[in-house]
Amino acid sequence: MGNNNKIQLGDTTNELAEEIHKSWYEFVAGQYIQPPVPSLLQFKSLLEVAYLSTMEMEEGRPTKFTICCSAKGRLVKRDGIDEKIESWPFETNRTFNVQEIRRLAAAADPDSTAIWVQFAKKQNSRLEIHGLLSVGSSWATARSAYSYFYLSLPNTLTVRGLSPGHLAVYQGGYAVGQIKSGTVQVGDLPLGFMDLLGAYPIFKEGHSLLRDEIIIPKHEYINEWHEFEWIAYVNVILAIVNSIKLQGHGGALIVSSSQSKIIENHTVKVKYQYSPQKHYLREAFVDFMNCRHKHSDRLVFLQEHGKPTKNDQQLNFTFFKLVEAEKRLSENTIFAGKLSGTDGALLLTADLKLLGFGTEIRLDRIPSDVKVYKVTPSTHEADEKEEELDSEQFGMRHRSAIKLCSQCKDIIIFVVSQDGGISLIWNKDTKVFFRSEIKTANLNMVLS
Image 1 (tube, rainbow, N blue to C red):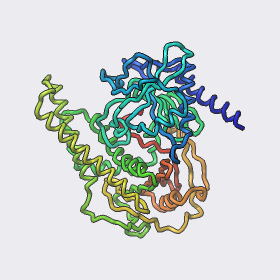
Image 2: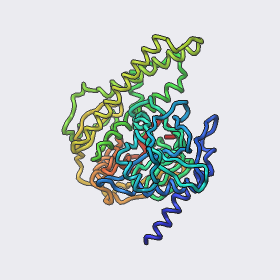
Image 3: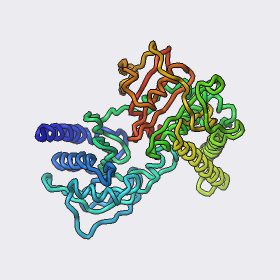
Image 4: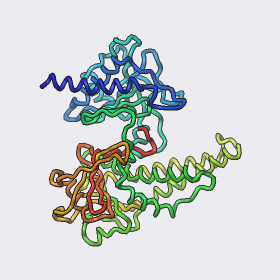
């Protein structure tokens, strides 16, 4: 048994290493300069040790980490810019093995600190742990949809251990492959927006309602500001889901149509219901978008008229207002997500009115004639498959969400499991659809 598992592990990590290594200079087009890549033998060693490290436990918690792998004697800079990363080399290099990764992971927050691994030019030379890199937390904050301003990742081969058996590989800031649930994916990874297709009717309604309060830019091209606005709207909802995930106890977010009557018809009972006048989240989003549009409009105006932007007082003022508005919006999404600590779901309207929390679904059972289908992820919508499921196989939180969606066509529900997995449940044409392992990364960071 042990030997078979070892062979299967080697096959999986070796396959990922081989596929990424042979396509290293083809993932990103244009003028992008790829970071140095170790030999295939070193690459295989890197991924095997990293993968085994994800299986280690530290005080009952899975080992999570970020490894940046660079060439010996080469300064580590940020991807795409000439800025050195703060480096903390050890006096003596450490052996690159599972035990050292597990020990260092306890001291190195994977969202701000990387374990610095170096490789020599000699193809069969061993990898060594050279120290730590302080990469900052802004990338992780932005990836969770809390921010739009961030420092890029190091220009290195980067490996992130996210959960047991889940390893993601980056070329600088670009995701190029992963192992998840024993499956190897390289290059054409499923994008986050594909996971959310079932939510788009609700999202479109919400964005349309908010549009009436957002100022239309005068100078910026419509496709640019409108696309940013749409992504920012979706990101607000994803940020709340990510905030629930960060609490570590699971929870659910119900997003309803503004016309939904689920409270009035007693389909749900909201234990902690807010006054209708308290819509700080909605106000924060509208203010953020208006500040963003004003700043972008000023920048486009100056560029079109050939005027310098560096010392423009009005541009500096609009940027300051934009940063403050972004901070307020982020704080509102985090505040909302933390409310999931109370039993019951959060209830949010599509136009970002936080109605309350501790929401109880008041339905006895899933109707016998309701069909539940699992949607299998794919890189293309046309290739997605539907598999009928037995609703009794789910846990209590998922069954409750399926009950509600079976009776309500005008809602979607994000369910966050205690282990951090996220599912989306919705109703379409009297069928209930279920999609697991939803990606909730900032949609503005397409390849992250």
